[in-house]
Length: 420
Image (cartoon, rainbow, N blue to C red):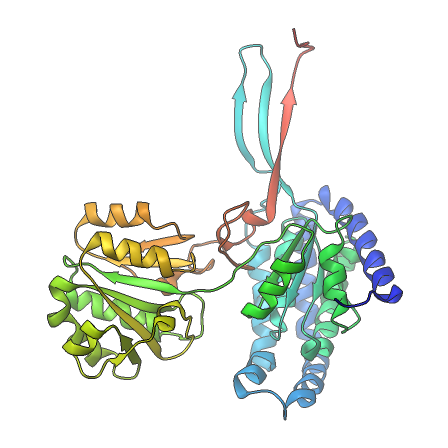
C-alpha cells in the first residue's frame, strides 16, 4: 500500500475542485461554443506541431533503450500523427451535440408531462498509457459531451501530454469556456493514480485505457465509478451451414487485418460436421498465422499445433489463433460463453435461426453474424470517435462515444398538480 504524500492529495484535490467548477460552467455551454473550442484547439495543434514533436522526442529519447519497438511506436508522434489528432478534433466538432437530446417524453393521466433528457456525466478521469493522442481524443470527446476531464497519461508521454493539453486549453480560452475543463495530473508519481481513483468528492467516472495491468489496477483500487475494458478474447464460430469461401475470407480479416487490436479474433470454433473439409482451407489461408488447436483439429491438419488449456483463454494480439472443434451449436455456445472475455463474438452461418440463437445466448457487448470482429469500433458504428470499448454491463457497453459519455435526468412539467 503506498503512503499518501500530502502533496499528491492536495494537488489532486485542487485539480478536482477546478474540474468540478469547470464542469458546472460547461453545463449551459452552447454547441457553437464547444465546437469553436474544438476547431481552435485543432488550429493550435497544427501551429504548435514543431513544439509538440520536440516534446515528444524528449519522451521517446528517455525510453529508447528500455522499451520494445512496439511501445516506442505507440508513443512516437510525427507530422502525420499530429495532423490526425487535429483532424479528429474537427471531426468531433462536426458531430451532433449529445447534450440536451430528448430521449423520451410521456404524459401521465394527471396531466404531468415528463421528459428524459441527456446531460453530461460531470468530471471524468482518464488514465492511459503510452499513446499521447488518447489525451487529445478523450479531451475532445469530453468537451463535446459537456464533461470536464483530468488526464493522467503514462509518465513516458509526460512532455507530449503537456504540449497537447496546452493546445486544448487555448481552444477553450478562445471560445470563452473554462480552461480547467481540460487538466492533467502534473506529477508522474504512481501515487497520483490511487489518489484520483479515491477522489469520490470530485470524480464522477474513471476510464482506464491501456494494458490489462492498468485496467486491473483501476478495477481493484477505484472508489469512484469506472468504465472498464479488460480483454478482447474474441471468437468466430463457423457453423456447419456457413458459406465456407466467405468464412475463410472473413476469418482472415478478423484475425490478420490488425493483430494488435482488441476486436481481433483470437479463437476459431468450427463445427465437426465441416471440420475435415474446412480446416485445410483455413490453414492455407492463414499460412502466416500460427494455429493451435485441440487434438481433433491437429489430427485433421498437421500444420495445426497442439493447444494447451491456457491457449483458449489467451488474447494473443499477435499472428496466433486457437482452434476448437465443436459438435454443433450447443457446444459452440457453451465453449464461447466459457472462454470469451465478453467483448466481441461472431457466428458465420447461412441459417438465420441458428444465428439468432447464438446471438441471443452469447452475453458479449457485441455479437456479430457473417462479418469480421474487427468492425468492433466506434468509428465503424458511425459514432465518430470513441474513447474505448466497455465490456462491463452498467451504464455503457461496447464502443463508448459521445452518447455514452452522457447520463440523463427527468424534467417534470406540471400545472399546479399536488399528489393525493
